[in-house]
Image (cartoon, rainbow, N blue to C red; front, side, top):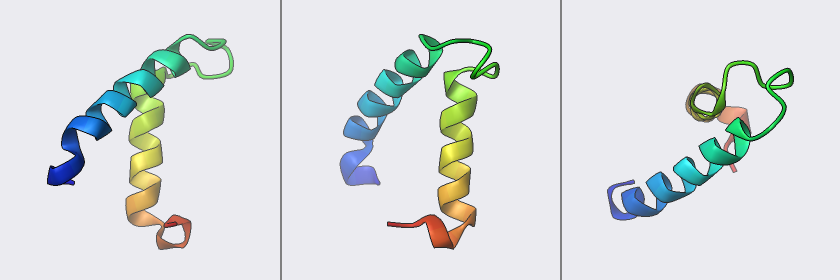
Length: 50
């Protein structure tokens, strides 16, 4: 992660802006919450790792 932190943060911010631009009824929690849930799922659900 340390080697790719800058790229991760750039992509993360881009995704948050994209998600926040979507219909708020579809994603009422917002982009940061959605990214946080995705990251947690990848950490704790080993079946989801690529």
